[in-house]
Amino acid sequence: MLMKSIFCSLALLAGLSAKAQVPFAAIDTSFTHIDLVIAGAPVRYDILFQAQDPVWLGEHPAKAKEKLDFMAYLPINGSSTHGYLWVNHETTGAHPVLGQGGGATILEIGLQGERWQQLTPARAVDFTAVGGTWNNCLGVQTPWGTVLSSEEYEPQSNEDLWEAGMRDTSQLFGRPAYLNFGWMVEVDVASGRVLGKRKAMGRFSHEGNLLMPDERTVYMLDDWAPGIFFKFVADTPRDFTAGQLFAFRQHAGGGTWLPLPRDEDSLADIRTVALRRGATFFMRPEDLVLANDGTIYFTETGKTEVDLAKALELGGHPAAHLASYRQGTRFSDIYGRILRFDPLANRVEVFLQAGPGLRTANHLANPDNLAYDTHRNLLYIHEDVNEADRGRVPAYAEGILYNELYVLDLSKTAPTIDDLQRLLVAPPGAELTGGCFTPDCHTFFVNIQHPLSTNPAPFDRDMTLAIYGKLPTVHKLGGPGDTRRKSPPVRQK
Image 1 (cartoon, rainbow, N blue to C red):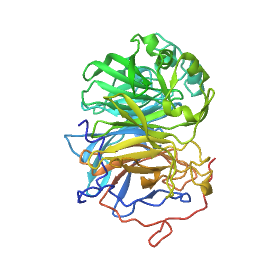
Image 2: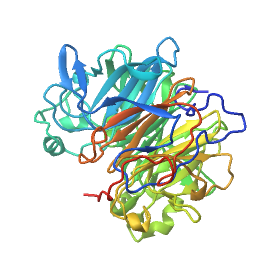
Image 3: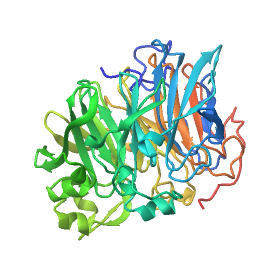
Image 4: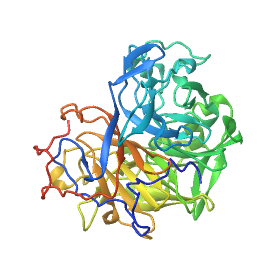
């Protein structure tokens, strides 16, 4: 099984019986808090890192970039209590020391006594050798100690670079500067050395990636509307500098993989090429994980309103399940969903349609990041609510932007929204990103991204949490033992 550290459970698991499923007592929802709502003691969390914290770029000190996203834990000497934590920064703007565009930070962390903490000064990655990066969003960890970082929302022109604060828009590596962004970027984590942009994997709005156990096949998602489901097969295992890229084409009962050109001009606009060849498109596909039985689950965040006349004109085909969200060339996909992909039959089907529960207060809206628990066959679902309206939150809470982390037992054959178990609710304005685990599954790392600046400290800045402990007892909202601060609802701005 590929990299147990990526697809583990909260162990919160130590000492639990083998019959236990979700390793915590689910908490109530909350749309009034101004901090973090999480399963109670003895579960604990430490704040390891925040935006604006000190980092070093070589010998130069700086304040860390914001928008913390993808993370990967890389153990040192196989340890689950001492390792490197990779943290992406989903940024595009200028920075006086760390440069323009996206970024990444490498933390050496350890469990000291009973608390997680940084052991050495945080290191910022220097992407100068590849001309910088753009919107470092998700990514993928490899078993050989590297990370491939995703460049999301590829710029469409040099004007896009200028508007984001990049003032040097001359040619980069013999091509217009904007074409240097929108690729996968490989970095050796221990040294921080940038190995290169992996152009054979295509230029598009890179989001989630799944490296298969053969160490050469990577499934990739294009966070766009229309977004393509890609597959890359490297010519040589562990070498992503050359290989064949494919786009998925759905048909009745299954699908096929369309081979795409390997020349750089085609790869630089590969979404258009794929649509012209009849690829199937989705509504902002985001993240994907591999389950124990070989099934792949991936999220489709959805899009409130979009006109896809151009994609249809080029020859693209909407995924079959999008038919009910279509009127002419316009699509309105409010909630999004979780899809299930069988890589043997090449079949994509809806696994769990997002929306409100019927018997509970659960409202799953716009699912984004995923993590998978191989010990208990559990799917961890991070929300990224597009807008707090139209049923994406309870009616009484419309206009309040909160995101939740849900867990689903995949042994359920026909799950519903009511089967979801809530682990935590982020501070107002924030989404949850980058969940990953230590190899022994005793610690779960997750990011709180873009919380409202009006929240009380420390919940007013992006942060990385280490969550760990045993099976918690939970203080219900408003009940005995609930000592959280109360405040009026924070309205979305």
